Image (cartoon, rainbow, N blue to C red; front, side, top):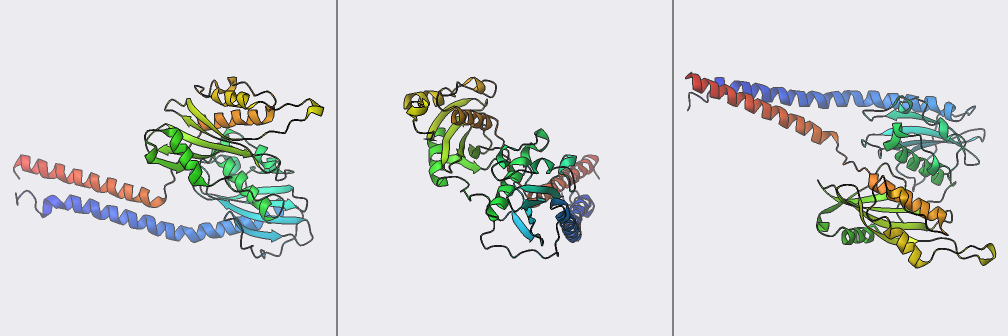
Length: 363
């Protein structure tokens, strides 16, 4: 046995282990060296973008002192010197991969976007328009706070559009052009409890996720490794109160199995206009008609008469829930550890094979 496990036999394993450690150290060193370079590049991109997102604007390079309650997405704010408006520097990591996306937006004194430009994008796979200096942002020009939710560019930026729009809303709120509404209109523990009740068996293992590609769906509750889930959806009306809230259960085949209405609010009756809102029974029947539907059939749900706008949004939200995507964010450390573990395992396997062959050959 001592002849088999000797220095010569262990040498390949030790060499591979040392190589693995060196590679990990080099990765850390590269990160340390490139970080200041990336930071300088981002600073230059931000400085160059000021005049582009606020055409004809004059800036002295000094940013304003941020308010204490500034959202975490707001990095800096620059006031244009001749009174044209304000440029806000925004950074969000709520996109598809959880990497930073930075952009500057110029907002005039009437609360309208006059220019927008991406200055930083650390996501691994991005379309050309979302690269720093790309064309993304031109479709926002002229939009105000109330227009942002309706602006969607399409599938090319499907997973980052929601994060960008949310950050833009933060800019409007910060400058006083929009109301600072809570992310969700009720305590999350209450929603979690309702989701567990609707989910049934296995509810004690539910975990909360925040989707990145939805307008109406704000939370998803699912078991790790399971495909069934409960989604929570809501939207604010133009008057500032929740127009609807509901939770919906979707099974492994992406089919609705249950739905519970939490809030449903439409306009009051107006006899002089001949307007009559739907009855409670009609609303209940409307929600129940989603059960059994999937992405291909949910559009067949008939809109509740007397609540066209709200019912239409509920149907859109149900479709979002059926198709919702949640991505578990992972930082670089787990990936590095995984690579190290894989290399060590490979080294151990190679070492084992060498020892076994030498033992077989009798050497």
